[in-house]
Image (cartoon, rainbow, N blue to C red; front, side):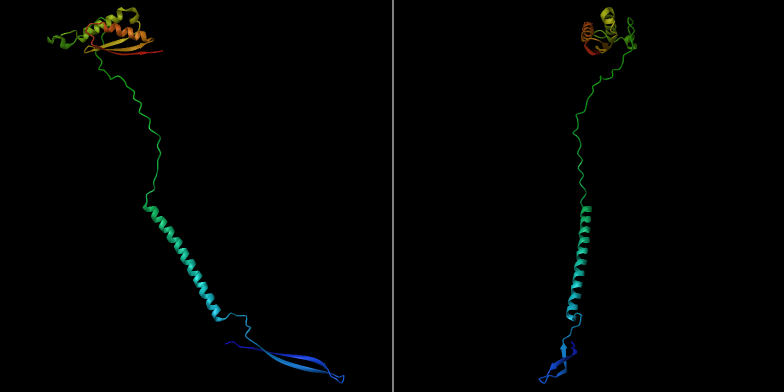
Length: 198
């Protein structure tokens, strides 16, 4: 429903006539202009509204998609247990320190006095010397040698096995004590635990 504007234009014109007169004429002119309104037509307005709605829908879908992606990432992270890699240093082989087995200590024998055993009077006979006689012989051997008696070596006898304990300054002294004890009758084995200090 466009409407037209009507505009009348009046002009005054001075005209020279052939007789030298001047005359003034008024010309009126009516012009019609099509609609010149500054507004927007209905079709253009509808197109703009549809475009704005479509743009809003795209933005909303984009935001919802981002939220769904974040939710999926959280769900995936919760379903898979985190993998922790622990790097341990290479294990060193264990250090084994061997100590002599604790031997049951026989009774302490004072040099020159054999130990008495309550079982000795029971009438049991043995084929060789018993531990007390071997102990006496070993102590006598170590005490009679002046170089060995100065070393303060302790010898204990159990079932014919002699255990030597003490400390010497030279390897030769350790060997000399073992050689002397080996000469005693009835000694079966020697456990030489004498330490050599430098």
